[in-house]
Image 1 (tube, helix red, strand yellow):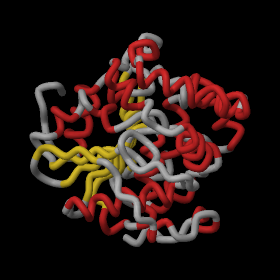
Image 2: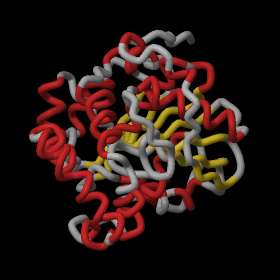
Image 3: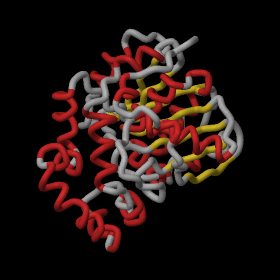
Length: 287
């Protein structure tokens, strides 16, 4: 099935495939290629607890997105096209061969759909965890109030631009201070997430979540198998929003983990991994 190769983001970001940027990535395991893509506030370490469940079955690559973690941090527009072009370039450089099992967390789900839109022949399976589906910019701005960093970046951009970078800098020096405000992030995980540059975070937030409408990429890969895993207590977007968005596509499946939050990769790594493995036909003791 041809899922299309052009997208409106080309108009604002014409040459991302000619960029020189190769991402920092951590690889492990053996088997078919699985690619883990983190969200708007994170790094490859978000997947630390989930990878042990996947690496017996896959060659796993988890990337730091452009502007995040230990990846390059250029002052460019962080559009969906630029992000997925960097992921594709990194996969080729590391010798990871398609077809890929693409697994995205939150904003990473949007990038999974963008990758499938542009290079459908390279995608085997698609998994979206905590899919932040917003039918409009207004809905996105409302849903994204539930995270303190996205809330201040959108609601108070001038203040955030002045305060957040030095605050993150202090957090990198003393990660335990900020990790104590989270019930699921460890100190090392918080420190690695805070390696992101604020301009990269805000550019990704705006281009890949607030302004990025998902109807086209959802439709483009709608004839392929897709699994969406959502927390029943997800405050970024309710399960019903995802259920409604994928309803026109019979091969798209939603699995809800009751009472679980948005970041299932950290909060429910075993159950989330078990649902992914079941989707690709691998049974585990966790099911």
